[in-house]
Image (cartoon, rainbow, N blue to C red; front, side, top):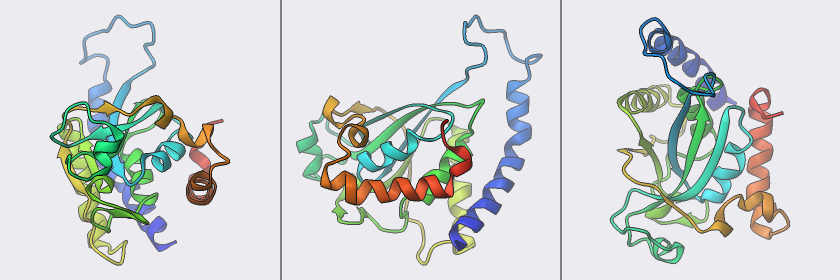
Length: 218
């Protein structure tokens, strides 16, 4: 509860600090008009690693404003890796989710709020029983704004001692995303009866639906 209240207060402040910048960017009088059949859609990308991508995919799919979530790999040296290669921990790649979201419905700051609430950012190269660099906590930022907001969030959470230990989340520039094989996509929704889904992912979804009940898709 302390973590949630700390993050709620902080993210409200972050949202206020960046509101003017966002308004300026969205001011139609200062921006060239775009020929787009979906004028109300302002799609952005976010890429996170926080343990097994099956878990993260499942709750981000349920977040209002998120258009799509893909599971895959980023942040390493091996090109077009296989899942088996990444599992060795020798590729430098992390399991990640690649999110497309409508910034008119949800901000990057709000997405970060979910990210830092729904995994443990203080355990180095580990989430629960999943151990290795491929399970590290990482934000791959797509632009300078995402970088600065992420660093600001981490610094504030550490200062507030929101967690018992310091945050070790890596903040790195996004380079390339390798989509995992199709059987890894939409994994929880397609395999709810599997033991991992029932005993590991389902409790995370229940936590998400309780904490973020006002942000669920209808």
